[in-house]
Length: 186
Image (tube, rainbow, N blue to C red):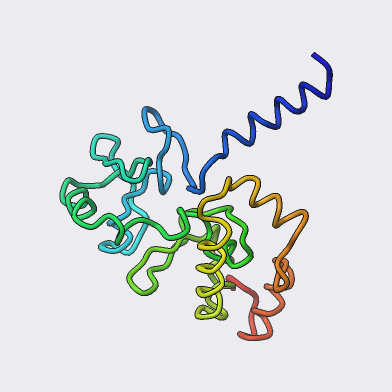
């Protein structure tokens, strides 16, 4: 096989593996696991990321959610749209720039909805102008990201076509320090 054919084949495989716009992981029998296996209801009831049990789970919109208790599973099934993470579980601050990446243990409940962040700093930067950032994130999710291949979308916005209001981490850190008089996370 020629080098060009090999590269094209490899690229197609990588892109196919990233189809869809959900931030999923794989663990055991759960190949499309949301929230890294954390219980979505616990973010609301316990205020923290709580590991769900592989034995207590439910599928919704083609992905698997795990729960810490059968009661949490029942709450979820009664109103799943209330508990699912916004932006497919990707970082809300990344979505401000139409970049679906991240989404880890940092989170915030805003307007009774779950928003994930790639880290503490991402959350702090998002909170600097929460109303504006929420509006931008929802705009890009609805108009550009929701039905896209997340890998292609990320590459497009990171390497080729940044949004006009794009800020680097260094620029955001500087803005944070000016606004609050301290370094982010200090």
